[in-house]
Length: 180
Length: 161
Image (cartoon, rainbow over all chains, first blue to last red; front, side, top):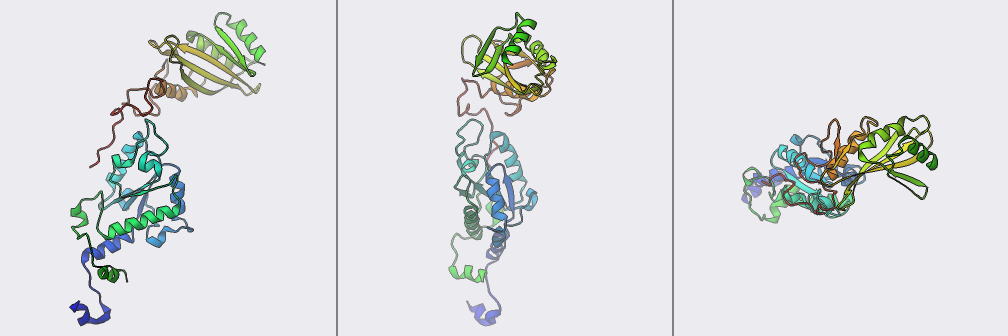
């Protein structure tokens, strides 16, 4: 790039969208929707041994107004689905959803009348996590996959007008420049 | 203890003990539903028996043409350290059983649960609402004729926008 040759090593150039997404992906504050036993593993995920703060996600916000990603951790019944959706609707855009565990993703072992067979019937899910319950490192992996999605400017839930119309593919050196 | 309970009950309610059954030292008696509150009151307040804890109250769906629904009362006497069961039955077209909330206050939620799951109506109950399922739900999930995966469309989900 001509500009960087002109100003030397003290500057780097990128696109504004890339810079914003880089900020967003490294400060994903979770809304802990801990409905059942997966929530125990979610606690371990923020605790020192697994340490979600390495990825900027240690700030569990119990207010939907202050959170970016909802981690739905547990069996979601039809009665609870209204509450989950209401809290999701209260989160500001842009927002993301992680479906943690077998019950949340597909109903799991609860093939019965009272359990929603997958929360994607009423929520736009970005990442599914397998396991019953998933280990905390599996949830960390989901967070890292979500970070890649955020860097690409993708979200299943928020409208593109809020995220910004970004190109699907970036030049690798642009990403590197931002991450240095 | 089982024999003593049965003796006392038979002396007090000679016409109300329809059936009694002892299996592995566990005594169960069947009483007509009209007399259930009266029998329970006696079992709780009799100075010797003192069944002061209603450990559980649950419904039964026999799925038979007569006496389809049952209600089972699991009692415990803290004084005698003795467990005892009372059963009563109701017909499918008239699933009504008098409440025992006046005897044990804890029966309130147990009867709401039994109403929610089996549709057994407890006459005289102070607040007979559903306890698990949403209030607008129209079925009773633990009845034998209710499908395991539910009735499609009976439980609405929020819209996925």
